[in-house]
Length: 137
Image 1: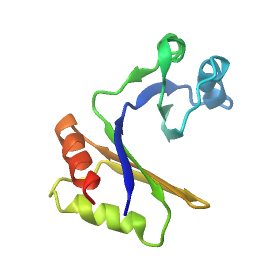
Image 2 (image 1 turned 90 degrees about the vertical axis):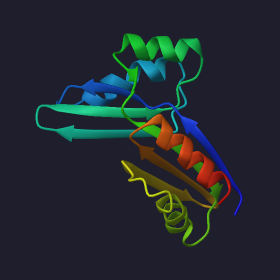
Image 3 (image 1 turned 30 degrees about the vertical axis):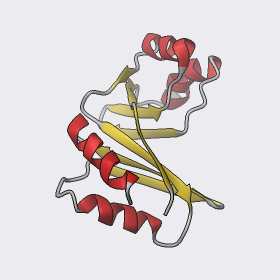
Image 4 (image 1 turned 180 degrees about the horizontal axis):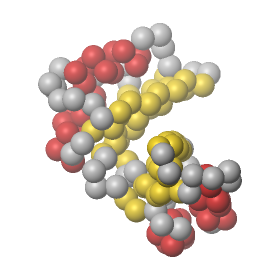
């Protein structure tokens, strides 16, 4: 199975828990042409968290910082891209499980022939190990 495996920075921001809060938070990134590949918004009582990746170039990074985004230091992420096939997510997670380290989160999607997954872990060391294990999968 041929995989493209790479670590990606995850940017996080708090957004107000109100109608339009997510659109408001994403507007500065849209305005500078950010081509986000992953957006996850989570709601908890009284607030919402927004995670996105990637941000590239000075314009996107400055716009994100001015809008309250920061690279998270507590969540590390490995992106895996491949040609989709039945069972690919289970195979990746099975290979990752062999490390004995727990996952923080996992998101995957397949559109047509393309598969992409984001494996979230708690430390840079765990991200390095995940990258190493999946590169030889």
